[in-house]
Amino acid sequence: MATTLPLLDKVIFSTVEEAEERVEAALECDILYYYGELRTGAVPYFRDIVEILCDRQGKRNTLGLCLTTPGGQAEAVEKMVEIIRHHYEYFYTVVPRAAMSAGTILSMAADKIFMDYASSLGPIDPQVPDREDKFLVPALGYLDKVNEMLRKSDDGTITPAEFQMLQNQDLAMLAFYEQSKNLSESLLKKWLTDYKFKDWDTHRTTNPGAPVTHEEKQQRAEEIAAKLSNNQLWHSHGRMIGMQKLRDELRLEIEDYGAVPEQREAIRRYCDTLTGYLERQGSPFYIFNRHVQ
Image (cartoon, rainbow, N blue to C red; front, side, top):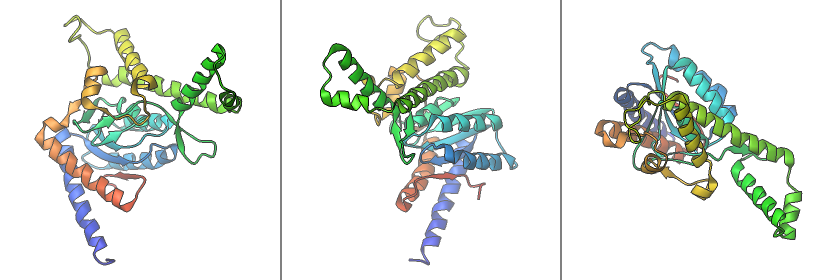
């Protein structure tokens, strides 16, 4: 086994590198693969890889981030977007499986989002460190439960157990959760307006042909942010929102790479091969590009 495993790895990564080159040609961009949580601790490593990628000959003016993530910290996402936009004029996200929570916020900073019918984004419930800073927990779940107990307290229906739970809440942590929620929504609104909607010049459905104002772009961004952060609408932090639902309910433009055979084959070969390898290895986090060794 010890002698065959390196050879197997070599075959796998040879396949991945060939597929990565095909994805770059199909989407006309540099490709960076990101797998795992979006944590502030990963930002320096992410910065270093982007810089190496940009220092080589043949750099394109667009970065495509192939993203598979359960979510993470909005603060990390904000810094990663700043790094990408410092080095690249355009930015795409490619979501072969799922980019949840903070991954959805990151996708909203892209000029184009590439998905297919099996891909998913998620509600933008920000994930924050717990008291021991070991795990990430969804902030909106805490805030929703506290608000529910406050409403029960106002109308006199709160139980003694719920009252005790309410008394035991850490007000500083609740304030931190509220700040994280506000940051997530403000980032999404700004990035949608500045990047995703930048080429939305005329109305297509209501009042076709009429020019779109900056205020109308901001209003649409606010509507999308409000829906994506509405736990009453999605009922679950882990709700997987597919491409068609994003198009129909949020009226977001999504590029369907599944409808282009060349893109579909290259992206699936690239992402499924590399993701499957990492899952077998039990790797929680990985960033890859063939030019960065």
